[in-house]
Length: 184
Image (cartoon, rainbow, N blue to C red):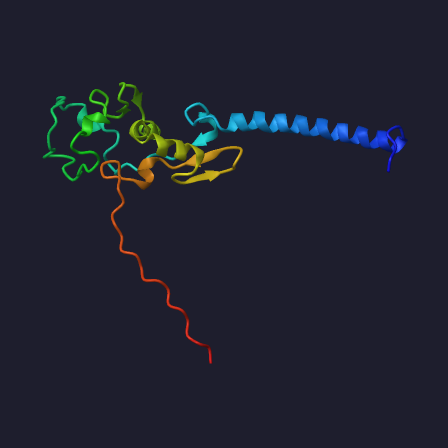
């Protein structure tokens, strides 16, 4: 047994104190850096890269066609253009102008009227789908690539979901694999 006043005891106590200090400092740095990493995507835009949304070819910018068309805010079925779009996204309560901006067709808008670009459409989706947005921000929902502590690339909701009909179509599962027979 080591006596309290011996040189070896002092060395052990000093080493333990030094180790304690190092752990304390490294723990503080880990907490500080972790707080920076967990800020929502809206506040840390410099660390996020989002590829352009998957817009149908030849329809953007929307103002190329809509600049000369009289604004009609009446909820209706589209007959001449965009009649191929079938709204199956809370269609009893929603229609085109709930998301697309009436005055600037190259933009979307939130429920409060804030204009947002198509590259920020996750803000629009997140108004109704808050838990999915939080999961997307953390990389749990959707696809995110990049480095865990540096730049990340997120895919927008529209890269995987059709915003007008976001549910995936039902798929019939493939049969289970067959167990191989005995080898002779």
